[in-house]
Length: 143
Image (tube, rainbow, N blue to C red):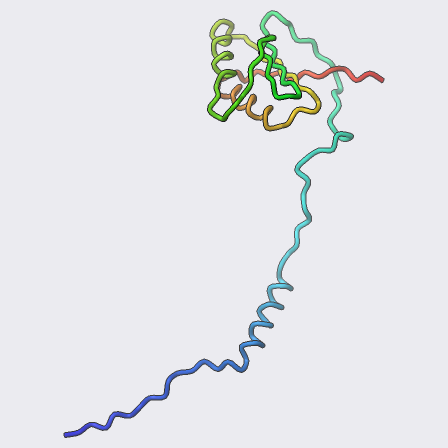
């Protein structure tokens, strides 16, 4: 017994309207997209905050950290540098000072032109040393 196999026609996707569909999709996404204005993540120097009041800090329980323009860090006038993210000299020094004086207040000063990355590293090490009472010092503006 012989079977006659019928050949099926291959299913084809019509490509004549492919360009129209792509154009309509492009138009749809262009119309439905919401554009957001670019936000500034920095503050211009003319708009930096100005202190409204001056408060004196008692100097008997303080440790001063000064970050200089060339990224040198002075902890109570002892110079050091943060060379890498694993460098923990600042936090170990402050842990030692915190054990000697539990009421320690860290006074944080920086030069106006210091890069923020160095200040961020120092503040992270302040958190690691659990010295959470920090006073950011400024100089009084001379008119």
